[in-house]
Picture 1 (cartoon, helix red, strand yellow):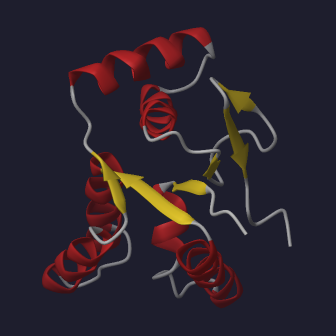
Picture 2: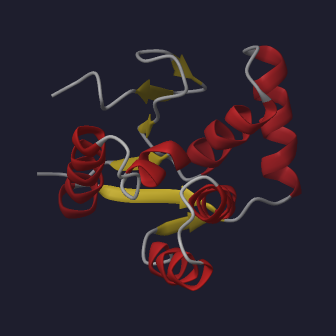
Length: 140
């Protein structure tokens, strides 16, 4: 079985820590575990930054615990957000009428040659620049 590169958007990772909805938390953990075990997980430095910020501000996770999780996220393939990625993110946001931040996610996924982006925030089923958007919470 060939392994597919799957880009994980920040929201999927944040839900793994969010105890406000235990069902969604369990589902997010299963999604991440499945990608790590069966596919090739990919994130970007943007995702790492957003994860740290959201987990410490919205979820009130201790900063050093969040830092440790970010460190462990480094075991995934990490796409650095550089000038080229930013420029591609801008192009994607303009051409596809997405937010700059969503364009940057897709640009990083495209750069890493991911087949899919797992995200709750983008349009499930849409393909942007060869990357298919999947909301894994809608699929079993």
